[in-house]
Image (cartoon, rainbow, N blue to C red):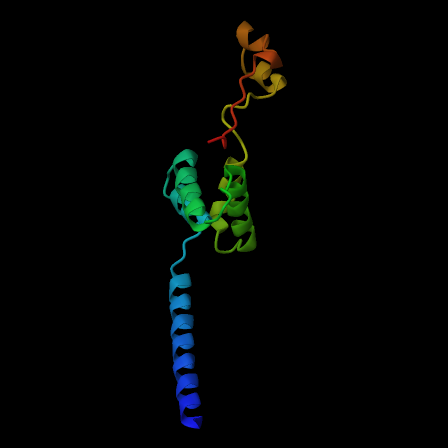
Length: 136
C-alpha cells in the first residue's frame, strides 16, 4: 500500500512539474500590445496601422465574456510602457498619438494665426464633425 502511494505521488509530481515547465515556455514568447505598437512605430509605420495591429493582439489575448474596448486597449499599451520605461524608451514619444485625434479641430486662436481664409476664420463649434478614433 505504501509503495502505491509513493508511485502515485511521484507520478503526480512529474505531471505537475511538466505542466509548470510548459507554462513558462508559453509565457516566454508572449508579445504584448505595447511591443507590437512600439516596434511598428519605430519601423516608420503610421499610427493607424500600428494601432490596428496592437489592438488586434490585445483583443486576441484577452478572451472572455466582455470585449476589450479601444480606449481600454490604448490604456493597456500606456500602462505597459509606463511599467517598463527603459524597455520602451524609444516608444514614449508615440504615446500621445493614442489619445489625440487627427479629426479634432484645432482651437480657433491657433487657426487665426495660420490662415486668412474667411471660411476657416468664421468656424463655429456647431459645424464641428467630431469622429471618435476608437469607435469601431
